[in-house]
Amino acid sequence: ADLVRTSHLIVVGHVRRIETRELRDGRLLTEAALAVEQTLKGRLRTGKIVVTSPGGRIGERSVQVYGAPSFAAGERVLVFLKRTPEGRLRTNALALGKYHLDPASVAVPLARRTEPRLDSRHLGAFVTQLRALAAPEPQDTMPSGRAASLRDEVLQRAVTERFTFLGSPPVRWFDTAVTFRVANAEPALGAATTLAVVGNAFAAWTNVASASIVLGAGSATVPARSVAGGICDGVNTIQFDDPFGEVNDMVGCSGVLAIGGFCSSGEQMTVNGITVHRIVEGDVTLNNRVGSCFGATNTAEVLTHELGHAIGLAHPSQNFNEPNPVLKDATMFFVAHFDGRGASVHADDVAGVSALYPVAVADADGDGIPDAADRCPGTPAGAAVGRDGCACADPGHASCDDGNACTSDRCDPATAACLHAARHDGICDAADDSDGDGLVDLVDRCPNTPGGHAVDSAGCACGDSTRPSPTPTATASVTRSTRARASPTPIRPTRTGTASATPASAATRAPAAASPRSGKRAAAARWSGARWRRRSTAVACPRRPSGAPTATRRATWTGYVASARSVCSCASTTRTRASLPARRRRPTRCRSCHRARGVEPTA
Image 1: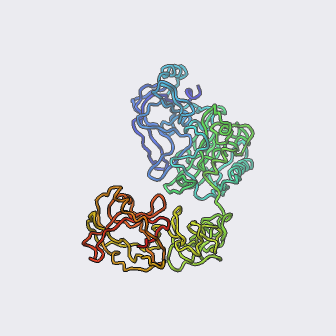
Image 2: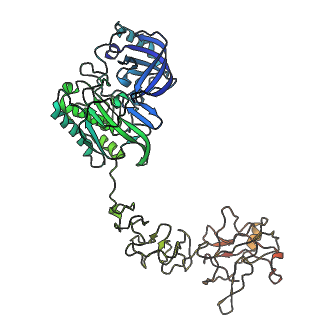
Image 3: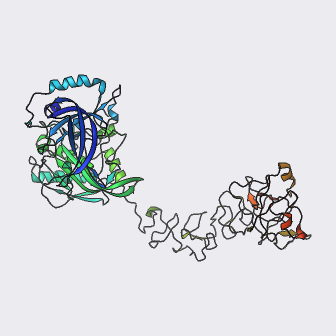
């Protein structure tokens, strides 16, 4: 009834356009142009009106007033309006003066609402009630009081399951030490009590151990237009008794108690995986007579709540019947508690401010490893470190001097950190096994073998980068009757069991495309009885390209590749008969190594 009685104009209409404007005094106002369908109270000369709301966004500049209504083009609404001293129309009691008319046949649950909603099928009965409540009063007179409900800031955003952040995207102060200036005192409390209330509200947020935000009082200032009216002046201000009429007056002791808001820029940072914009100004304006209506303790609760908005926190819930006691107990709950809590924050408030302003982890040398886990907390600035916080230059670590990724100096030049995968103790010693293949680095000839690969006695596997691979220079077709040796310097067995090397004349010959071979022919082509021997000059099997065929199909030569059973297999033959010397023109058979992976077979 108070909302109807104190409104100058009540209409039903649909939103035609939305626009944000900057006034000459720097204020940002958002204008919603409405086409009026019904006038329930007041008189209009035309069927079009413009409803203004404080705040808005132009480019990267943003002013957000918590509790201001939001409109969308094409939306059908019921609005309760008041005229400002400047003659503009604005909603009565901020967002409480705007209802979204839901066309659905079933009312939308309160917990899902972003502002008051009304089922269209009930609109007729509601209009009848409104007309009965609307008292005939001259349109050119201003009622002495402004209405609202017994809520601190009316409905604004959708109810969530836990704390929420203001803005889209969310916002926060980048500098965690924030200073507010107090412009005046609450008349009913006096200067000393007012400053005590402000100090207690600052301490409520500052004393959260898991948050980094620090609020404090700066030098005194004078009252000025604030974010509540859509203006940013670069001064963080707390002012009492609404000196510029930016908040709807209370009716008796009920209504909008205060408004907290901020101005933000387009500058961004990431906090806990969330992209946030920078708050550049925060203001709090308390309504008339808050101190005389509610006293110092309750005024401290209101101010603590509004400071939460000024640092980027929203209401955790806007459901009068909120079933979650943690959300309902929060100081940031949308209804003031007035239960004697004063300037205090509760579990959900702490969770919200801690997520938005996490405490920085101690890291003395700035290497990204917390001091609690850093075995070398004095590493020089800029040095890349391992998981233990140590760099190659730290005591007990070798220095990288050869540029190799896996060498006896036990350093990885990609990160300038020591390799110590076995023990992770920050010290390079005889117990380290960088690739985890069971062979310590001191005797491992291939200490960077990929994990999970079977290795030989030297710690090497098929395709290790430390072994050279043949490099084909041309391609040629292949027939069923041709074969060629695919590796340079093959090792031949002797009667005495030693190995001798033969010239690698086939190493530079070209690979060729081949037609498919049946499984039987491929099986017959294996050298199942070949002997195998590893020597330091042995040539590794190069890796098979992604998608290359296995040993059962003939295709472009790819050397020897790792199979699922951790053995090497020849992908195909490669040379034509004409490409080989006359003395070596004989068929080539596909080979497979059985246990010693990556080792050239003896012929």
